[in-house]
Image: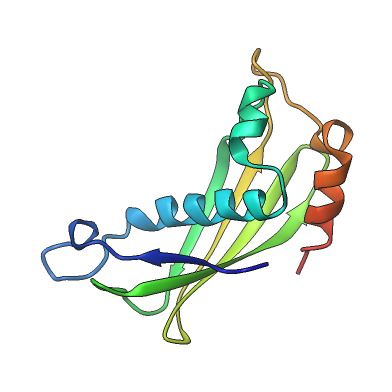
Length: 134
């Protein structure tokens, strides 16, 4: 899969000129949505089918700060899959240097808030995600 590139905006930085930590969760979401689009299953397609995918956990390890106007290369891999949850792993680099390692775990819910077994609902997408497990 092609890594996602996020170009740091000036407003994403704090008074020290460093990207504020709260922005990395957004960058992860941008990269995850880009991955799903590359797999032929854009996030809005799930929502049109009445499925949402909330975050149930998030972990970010900061290795090196990023600043304006860095181009952050974000690679997304699948770390774990269970019948109801997927954990994605993220590696963020600037100029080849590791800046961030992170994970996010997501479940899938229907419009009533009930859990959805994504493998039953989207076997093709599940096979593509399984192929990305690292």
